[in-house]
Structures are given as structure tokens and as C-alpha cells.
Length: 408
Image (cartoon, rainbow, N blue to C red):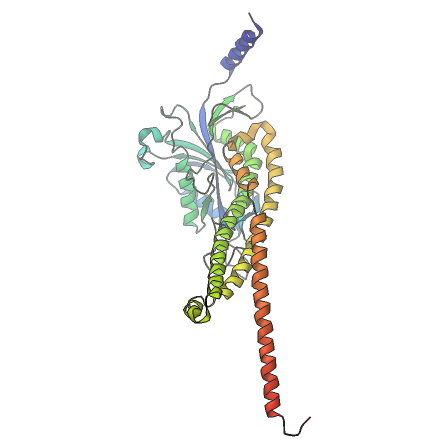
């Protein structure tokens, strides 16, 4: 027997000894923005009050069969600031997003655990039975990370597309009832899938002491983990193991979304400014008589350009500030993701995220803004100088006219 065949035999024996996969799971990012309590709005509930109201709302949902959640006094609510600049939460009042624009998010040290039951007929039907893997789900949600498990053998379609969607809907409904807007982070601006693209195949075993992840297939990750008294406790254990990595990724992604979204807005506005500049140059090149109509049509363009350049500088400040936060978050993420193979959860999303940030080229954007800024500023200075000269000449003429005859 050759050495390679011996190794193959050993690999087969190890494979046969692996614990069977009992559950399928998915990890998503679902958070909500706490209302601001500044400017004297003391009537706004505190984060602790919101948490207790949220637990009460979930408890009253008929789809929630069991809920385990400590009171706010026994739980620790950890405040976080996520960036809100860019295309996703852009302003609608015409003002640019500033580099400090953010939302307040609360995560819970002890996640809310739920056993939910949603009949198949109440789940999305557009993919038929193959899209619905179960009716019963076990959920752990810490305010940011949403972990959902279901029995692998509940149906023959254990990896159904809509697995876990019901949990996200129940939490979102509760947040909506409290006037809190749920926010989900898919893998990119054009993706509608609300979970990480890697499905988790969970294999609890009595002789396993730690949670370990390893790649099983292109879109599947195997999790070997200790057994727990029930599935909710298993969800709790896994949620704790993933918490730092998932929460860091969520926060980092908020900064990354701001960088990408702001860069898109900046380039669109830059294109508009260049068009304005072209119109001004075209008007100046025409003989005066023929340019009168164009001058009337393009009146106010220089003022728009001045405001536009100021907005572009604000966009550049937003991009650079959020890039720095991305770099800081990346170090924490890379360190935590290496432990136990947890980074495999975002095996698809993380490389896409890095590519969107690392390939961003703002040097040319900055150089163009600098050129536009100098031209706009030069024009403003020239106009101010001419206006000053003209006003000075006018004042001199008036003084001459008003001066008494014979005065020196």
C-alpha cells in the first residue's frame, strides 16, 4: 500500500467518525437605530426601556413559542456608533453627508433567544416547497448578529432559500411596532439576500469541547461544537462564539458602505460640475451678442459651482474619515476571524468588501476637485477685485462731483 493510499484511508476513517449534521443555520446582520435623546427630548425612552418594550413585543407575537431574555437590568446594553453617510442612508434635504454622520446602535451582551413556529403556508411561496426548509426555527439575536437554526431533517429541502427569513420578519415587525427602523446588511448594494451566503452545517457532539468551523463546500461551512441541553442553548453558545467577529464586521461594513456610497455621490456631482464648467467655457467663447441667450440660460452656474466644490470637499472628508475607521476595524476583524475558523462565515462577503475598499481610487477625484476649487476661487477673487475696483472708482467719481468748487 502506498503512502498516499494510507493517508486516504486515514482520511476516510476520520470522516466516518465525524458527528452527524443535526442542524442547518445562517447568520445575518440586523440592527436598529436608537432615537437621539439630545436637544431636550427627554420624553424619548432610554435604550433600557426600548429593550424591555422590545422583549414584551416579541413575547406577545403568536409566532414566538418560547422566549428567553433577561430584563434590561440583568442584561448589558452596549452602545455602538455605525456610520450613516453614503448612498444607503443619504440625506434628502440637499445637504451633503458629513464625515461624522452616524446612528446609535445597541447590542445586548446576552442575546435574546426565541423558538418560533411559522406554518409553511405563511412563508414565501414563490420558490415552492424547496424554498422552505422548516416551520420551526431557533433564534439568537444580540441586537446586531442574528443567528437562526433549524432541524436538518425537518424537510427534504434542508438548505431552502427562505430558511431564517421568518425570524428576521418577526424581529422587524416588533421593531416597527415600537417605531424603530430595522436595518439589514446584505453582501452589497445590489444584493437582496439578508444573510451571509455561507450556510452553516451544525454537528454537536458530546466529545467536542470547542466550537470549530471548517469549509465543507463552496457555500457551506461545517461547525463541530459541544452538545447542549436544548437547541436554544446551542444557538446561545454559537452566538457567543461568533459575536465579536460578526459585530465587528457589521460595524466595519457600515464604514465601508459610507466610503463606497459617498464616492459614488461625489463622482456624480463632479460630473455635474464639469458640465457646468463646460457650459461656462462655451458661453465665454461665443461673441458677446450671440452669447446673450446662453448667458441668461446659464445664470447662476458659477454660484452652483462654488457650492458644488464645497460639497465635494465634504465628500472627500467623509471618505477619508470612514476609510480610517475601516482600517481600524479590519485589524480587529482579521484577528478575531482567525480564531476557530469563524471568518468562514463571511467567506463570500469579506473579499468583496476588501475589494470595494482597496480598489477605491480617490487621488484623481481629489486632484480634479483641487483644480475646480482653484478655478472657482480664482473667478470669485477676480470678480471681487473688479467689483471693488469699480466701486472704488464710483466712490471717487462721486467724491469729485460732490466736492465743493475750489476745494483741494
